[in-house]
Image (cartoon, rainbow, N blue to C red; front, side):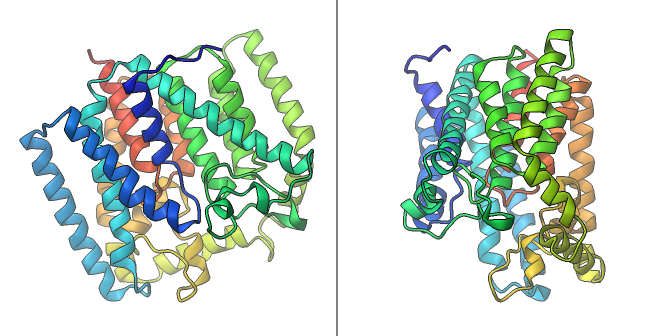
Amino acid sequence: MHIPKYNSQIVFCFLVFLCFTLDLSAPIVFYGDLFVAIPLLVLYRFIVFPRVSIKKLAFLIILVVMWEFLIYIQSFYSVYSKLIINSQRSLLLFVSSLLILDLLKTFKLKNILSGLNLYIFVLSLFVIYQVVGFYVLHISAAQLDPAIWLGGTASRNQYMDGLYRPNGLMAEPAAFVGAQLALLTLQYLMYKENNIYRILGIISILASMSFAGFLLAGLWGLLVYLKNFKSIIFLLISSYIAAIALQDIFLARFEVLGGDSDGSNQTKIDGLNFFLNDSYNLIFGVGNVVSDGTTPIFFEGITDVTFFLASFVVFGVIFGSIIIFLFFKWLFKSNYNLREKVLILLPLMKLTNPALIFFSPYIIFILLINRSRVK
């Protein structure tokens, strides 16, 4: 395995991936990352690259004004009292990503790839450490939870019958799966050959014991590895080992699928019904809402319905249709081949909207990689 030498571009990219995926239920992490770490990355961008084009500045102003106006309209009929405050997170993340993009355009692609590989390696090892710590060394889930280390509340890493599922540096396994799958997709777009970083990344997704993670990793593996006989053998062996190791959670998941105890899917169904049965929601969207004890329980899953549905739920049918149309229009005209285009769509099953911390950088990086192919 090649360990890249110190390089400011590699370090900056590593920090971008870290700060935009770090999502633990600890105040010091949430507020520190959102109001200190990410703004410092933007500040560094202006120090190193102190220019913003008039065209981009105009776009950012129009984007912010329109977005804030939509949030203001949503606040009149929303049952979520903190909608305006909570929605600022999405704006900050998206605007920060767009500003950082200008600096990333000046980086060598190999340095971006090195920073990405290094982060995938660190993130994967941390998840594997959690698995070994709990199931081999019998360390408690609380002692393995970085959110608790930092004075926060326990991460959502428990499943049926108390089964422990590692969540890495995110609040829950599903969030980790979305981020890691996006990281692996970006890596594949820049480097097609298989390597230790990719293998560790896939292992970490399977080790998270997320049902959605297993399905998405399987689809991702089919697209990436079904090229030749050697790749097919590698995929079959990996799938067999994963199926044996994780059979209990899959059987348990199938048993409750669609039943009364299937709370995860039920919140999504209830949330979509709430969205469809209100004309204001349909036209303007429900916004970036969360379940906080004063809101309906289905707010936990109302925006976790893939990027393709969440665009309508969050922004309404008018703006949602525009977002989906522009995205697919760009993707269709991009320099990516069909295999790559399908791979790009897979992480968007879990990275559903700008409120999620890695959504914005993921979009920015696929734009950046596509732009590098035009040169």
